[in-house]
Image 1: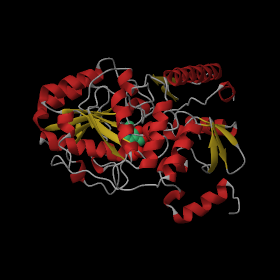
Image 2 (image 1 turned 60 degrees about the horizontal axis):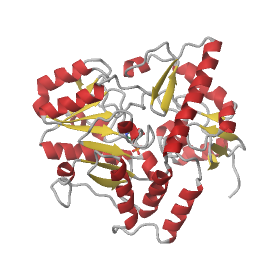
Image 3 (image 1 turned 90 degrees about the vertical axis):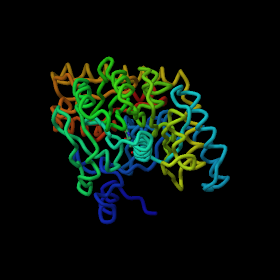
Image 4 (image 1 turned 30 degrees about the vertical axis):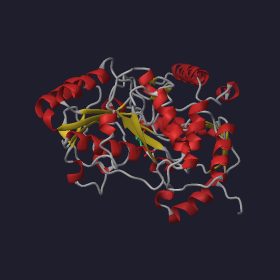
Length: 414
Ligand code: PLP
């Protein structure tokens, strides 16, 4: 295989892969330029096909919490793969991964493994509809729950409206029962419940939103959602795909202990391999096939290699790791804030546990409309200046920054 640089690889890819990438944000569409092709990664660093070493502040969009190519994860994967890469039959790997998660998260009585966050949220919403016998899903503008049709709706205004599709190919019928509400707007959620509460199957919310940049839930917002759902017989689905096992040892629940009926996980729990999950109340989970009438399945669900990687990752996520992540987040927030202040650049930095992101706007940023007021051209310029200086930031102004246990003083200094 002759070595090629990023530009050559991207040109070859665009001929065969739409946009040259297998997930849109990788294409650098929001920041311009040619995406870097990565040849290997180790600890806090990525190495690209152009011979550069980059400090990685994306960390695989969240999964890489112990650092790249962590020896214990590589060993677990190697050992599992040596026994076969998948059987389509139950294994002790998946049982132990589920046991590890249930032991950490007191609100999860039962859990089912899937292969992506999209599958987890899609399955949880189907289960909520099957359990309640109601059609309506309530979601918040700017919250991302994967690319299942029913979630690709986001109204721009602050008033709750029936969702219009966000993507071509999503029919009005697919989002007809999705209602989009402004994030952090409790009065709008209350009004919605007062109006159509008896049709609402579930409210789904990111535990702490991190897909419009990081937004901190207003004090009491998540608990108020819990109380409203209880009052009207709807289910609360808390999406911890991004925050789970990252915001703290027990995810956002460890920062703000609000009890969901169902919770979704992904990213960290797969250790960089495809694994995700949804779980919660036993009486709700027992409505799933083969026990109950709600169908849900997957050829690769609970794959032993992915389960082994996830288990090794979670077992490595000690209290020391979380303390380190928090310290790294503090350091980066301080360094970048100071530099922007000195340069006289207006900015707002939001935190949610060990997650954070910068917005080029005066702020405050408390919802999607606020986030869209940021100067994305400035973000693109900042992104490229940082990339040229050897630091890989998320190539979009609407993403969180991620750190890992491997981000040491040398990486932070860089
Ligand atoms: N939910 C949240 C909160 C996410 O951040 C994501 C992905 O970023 C998803 C769901 C979808 O997960 P996946 O990309 O694994 O399908």
